[in-house]
Image (cartoon, rainbow, N blue to C red; front, side):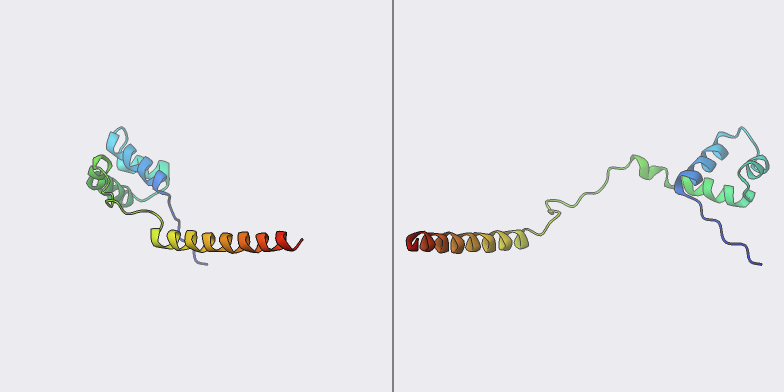
Length: 98
């Protein structure tokens, strides 16, 4: 019978990597505690250290790029204004008849 592959969250990986960085326990002890292979802990620790710089970097934001396409919004506004004007004229004609 095949064992299903375990998937770990980023939070769990960070917890394990931080535990390994503290050097309070050996990799063997951490492996027993977290039920992992020591090589996996070493990989996560190394990945954590190499990507630690990204925590302090400022995010690169796209300059002046709106979240929604303005052309589409302006087109919709124009459409709604035309619809409103049509209904206003129709209502005025109806009022004259009554």
